[in-house]
Image 1 (cartoon, rainbow, N blue to C red):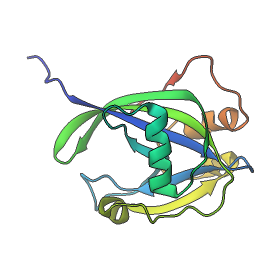
Image 2: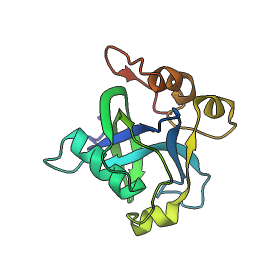
Image 3: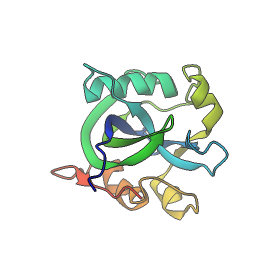
Image 4: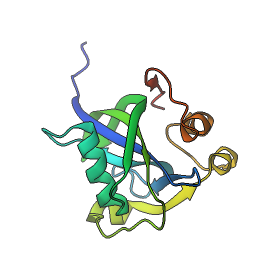
Length: 164
């Protein structure tokens, strides 16, 4: 039997750093399991039609954090995998861009109802604190790979990370 072709969802994630080298992460639950456990992940979301990856990153950062004027860097990681979204299994095509901003307290005014219901926390992490954390973090390789990215040491080509 041939597996069904899944609808693709291009997604941008931003590894957003402040001047102290901390990365901003969100803690949230899946829409398909709103009562499930939360986990930490990079800010971002779906890329809309006719929108570049960079345009989507700027829009998502403004909506989810209130930060504008962010300096965007290269795509450093890639990750593809299936996830339930509104009852449909969708193939997420995540691209992780580097972003740098002046830091400060993120603003949640641009959150939609789903984000208000499913996002439990938003905070800055040092790479050391992230590596020492017992929290669930996606992608799982983030704590190991983040110090190089924070220091501006980027891979020549984006690294492929696991979906699990």
